[in-house]
Amino acid sequence: SAVAGVNADELDIAIEKDMVSIRGERLDEFKEEAKNYFCRECYWGRFSKEIILPAEADTSKAEAVLKNGILTISIPKVSGEKTKKLNIKEIE
Image (spheres, rainbow, N blue to C red):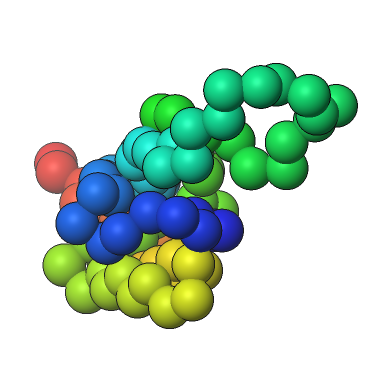
């Protein structure tokens, strides 16, 4: 996720079984008195992003790295079988 202009300590990352939430705030450090422009490329203020994971995640092994304004979150899948086959005991 591109989070240029935000420090690592200003980010809040939460991981649940099947979702990652990223929240933060970009502060507008450049105050312009005259607003003589058509558009601005960067959004300033609070932001949040939620990403639904395709598989259940092992949150205990998750890692986040912020380098040059790019946040990389690595979350391994939960290992193991998704479906458990049960044996039926017949009682007479």
